[in-house]
Image 1 (cartoon, helix red, strand yellow):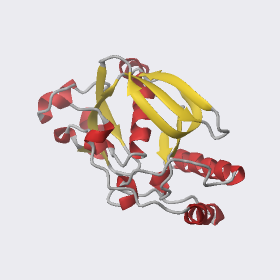
Image 2: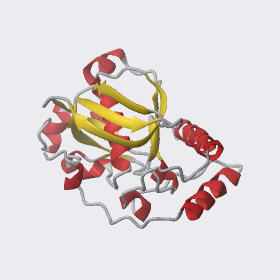
Image 3: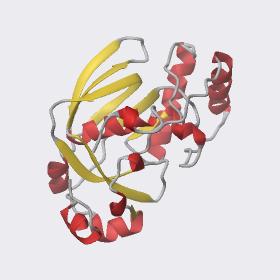
Image 4: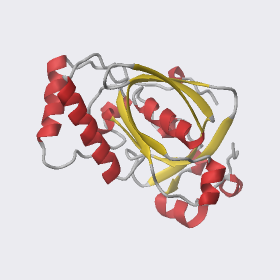
Length: 225
């Protein structure tokens, strides 16, 4: 499997001007309700989001991050990219504080991930190890599929305060980082998924919720990683 972002087909960007982006974000912030999460089929999920270059003033940026965090919690999920609420900017929020079965957490290398927001993220693999597990997406409601991802990644991004960060992630945290960064380049997890593993949430819960994917691979007919 080719993990390079350029191996995935993203629509050419349709840039919005600074005033258009600002108006779009201010419209979201003016609503009393949280914004709806855009679903697969909307063009914004297939565009290469614009690099963040100060299109928003600091106050508006931090308000947007707060709304995205609350939207992620409400869903609930462990990450949310700005295109998922219709904003074509390279911004995502991540946080994983869910209680999970200890056996599953061990096999999936799932550890708590403290909240952070990232702008203009780029990741690269550390080593050749990969891991294959079921994952879902708030923008592909009702389904999950097995995705093979890098087990360890290096991430470079910019904090909302403008400082640059280089960090390394492994296990489930690395999976979240890759998933959310991919969103900003017009890619959904389905682009990387074992298509024969695709399962509704109901079938996943009934049959494939064990920590690994070997049983699903054997019965659904896909290589388990």
